[in-house]
Amino acid sequence: MTDQSTVPEVEWQRLDPRLLVIGPLRALRQFLVPAVVAVFGVSRSDGMQWWWSLPIVLVPLVLGLLPWLTTRYRITGSRLEHRSGWLNKTMVTAPLDRVRSVDLESSLVQRVLGVTTVNIGTGVDETRIKLDTIAREDAAGLRGLLLAQRTATATATAPDSPDAHDFGDVLATQAPPAPVEPAEVLATIDWSWLRFAPFSLSRLVVVAAALGAFSQFADDLPLLDAEHLSGAWEWVVSFAIPLVAAVLFVLALVAWLFISVGGYVVQWFGLRLTREHGSLHLTAGLLTTKSVSVEESRVRGLVLDEPLLLRVVGGAELSTLATGVENGVTAILPPAPVSVVRRVGADVLPGTEPLDVPTLRHGAAARRRSIVRSLWLPLLLVAGAGAATVALDLPWWPVAMLAVVLLPLGVVLGESAYRHLGHALTSGHLVSGDGVTTRRRTILESEGIIGWVVVQSFFQRRLGLATLVATTAAGAESVRIVDLPVGRAVEVADAATPGLLTAWLPRRQDDRPS
Image (cartoon, rainbow, N blue to C red; front, side, top):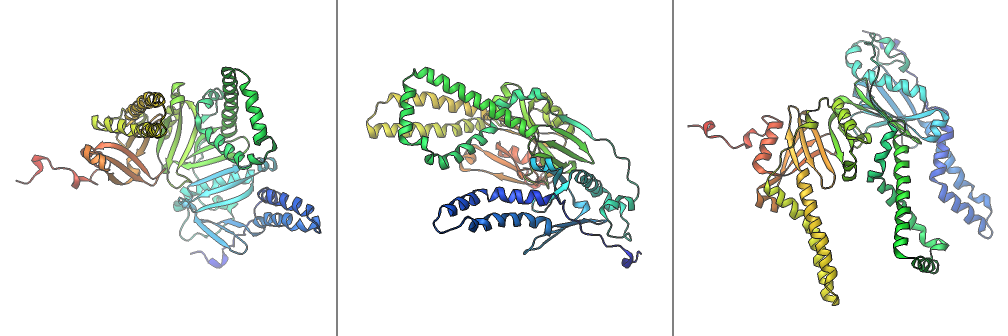
């Protein structure tokens, strides 16, 4: 056995010194508004000098220096160690064979300075080791080392081998690794896909956030007071209303094209999806470049989304369901042609059977429930409008028009939801279909199912229906099949996980004891 006294101690390493520039810049950005308010407020106060506000500026600068002064890390022969903190010190130790993902992220400033941030996942969302500001070349080498070591540590490290080495010499002290195969490229960005950007409504979240932020201080703007708004409205209505509506529509369309296409480019610039070291690697981003790794053994399924507008132009979106990664759901493709999405999905699964298998309908009762569920809101709106009409003695024709529009729309949406509803079983996957305007197919490995829940609401019990929930550690931690006949729900669960629910199945006549 190796004499432990002869084992050299691994030196703790600091983060890259360029963090001394990035840290204060980040801190100043966070304290920018309070600092500006303090500086201008103090300078305008009687009897107070401008230099009294210096602590408000200097404190963020000092705080920005602390991460470099207080953070250390090292890699031994079997584990990764990380310590940080000044007043509250934190020490995190992760075995190398527990490393599940190594993600790289570079902001615009980091890219200019040639550094990146390394986020190391250990299979538990809360346990992520963040190495902020590592030289780009060192970060790439560190990721390759960790991903290679996670599978080699258990077999390559002998019981009597030293437990600590410099991370640059870890592989050299072990048996020669198997030849590294070149990365397999699954997908790269194709700028012809930009045509799908305006048909994806995900950027509406950005628009809503911008409008919400604008509303916080809009009342303080001098041009948005009652006088100016009243004058602007009078100027607008002086033109023909159809012309005003057409101009506003064109402006909104141009703005939406700019937002959607610009957001698409910023998020997915340089997209490269590869398979290497048993993991899927996704790199993308214009201003902030992210490199995300998902261990393939942790990928338990896929989600294929076809929103209504994207479906019209032949587009779709693809995400993975994985365990041990942040949020559990990782988008691996932007809105792209459905043929590309299906090809990449088949490469990830692998196989096309779960993507192609037809889903089974849930029957007439599920169809009625889907339509009735979609009619609840239109009925409430029409009833509310009718009550207001009676109370205020208003004419009934607006209520009639509202009913003529909303009730058929509710029926159409209910029928659409039923047509998207379905389920299927393949040799190794559970397939669930759902969605109202978005057609969604969720594919989950049977081996990733850890339990079942059968839920029945009051109305479902009356119709003999149930919601079958497959619990899993991947994605949102559950896959739901809605409005499934009760007997069929138990049969599906038993078929997907044989033997787990056999006791709940009704016995056949020839199985009963005589």
